[in-house]
Amino acid sequence: MTQTTEQQPYILAVDDEQLNIELLKFILERNDYEFQGTSDDEYFFEILEERLPDLILLDVIMPRIEGFELCEKIKSIPKYKNIPVIFLTGKVNVKDKVKGFEVGGVDYVTKPFNEQELIARIQTHVELIRAKNQIEKQAENLRQSNILKDRMFSIIGHDLRSPLSAAKLKMDFIMRGIIDPKADNFLDGTVYELLKTMDEALNLLQNLLGWAKSESDQIQIIPEKLDINDLVEQTFRLLKLGSEHKKIVLVNNVPEGTFVYADMNTTKTVLRNIVSNAIKFTPVDGQIQVNLKKDKQKAIIEIEDNGEGIPKEDIKKILNPNEHFSKLGTEKEPGTGLGLVLCQNFVNKNGGQLRIKSEVGKGSVFYFDLPIFENQLV
Image 1: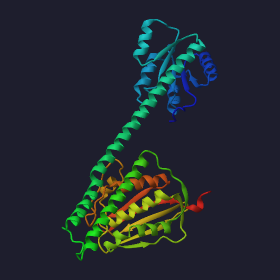
Image 2: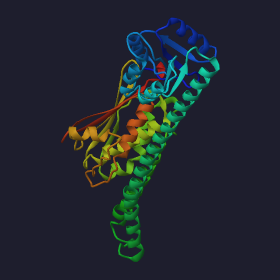
Image 3: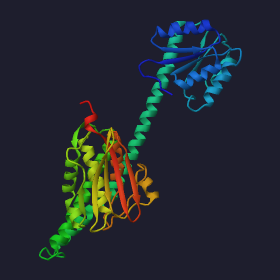
Image 4: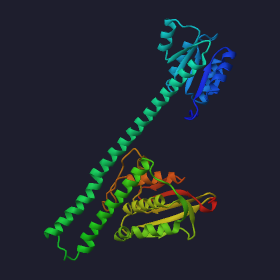
């Protein structure tokens, strides 16, 4: 079912007299309205199913069904109940007017039609329903913005404060002499922990900002020719500190000269988050490899680890944007669960899909597809 356009209001009419249908068509179309009419009340619902009108004109007196009864049927169906109905009638007594309003009508136009009155009444109710729909849309956007704000504050208040507090505490210990800068394990232990903590905070902040922009549709996707082998190498260099500390081997199996057509910033974010996540859940002396498969239109990028794996029931939670799911890594590394939700969103924006295959105790494969560059007309 298609929705009404904002440019030209669409009016649907039911009247058992074909002459009235033709007259309404003539009047409305010359006043820049789209119009469709029928004398068949059953066919009316078929038309209604195809496209929602801005307003319905409904004859009161018809041979098979009274207009009031038809209006009650329309209003009993949730997706139609907010469409304004104006009754067309030769009756003008108060009793009929009251009944029309009781069954959900918004106005009356008497026959024979006065063109100026008809257009004025239609215009008034079309503008009212469109204003109402706009207000409801703005209210929903505001509600979503409040949900986004509350979730951001929750993450900032808990997940971002935690690593910053830990880093501040260690620096306090150094300043007070509780941790000795001359100790043998100062660089490999304390300094490394500080760097790792700050990396976690920075990565979380980047994800948080990216997620907020994505949720508010502020992310601009600019597809271009990207060398996937090179992006994987950049990602490995960026995450070298964490992988070397856990003695995890990073293997780039993407052939050189493999090009995709995607947005650079969002693709980098996806690779960084998935590889970082793999490092987190892969034990010491493990291995992570990035592989690439091709079909006719897509390049499928796989990030495979031999880590602890993910239970089936957790995979759905990980990819659910409405669920805050996180676990500690093999070395108790914290997480927010935000990174993979962001990855899924960014992959979708680039025309692909993020999927997960995993077996507990054997490892996981995160894979997503991007358009191959050679297939693009650029």
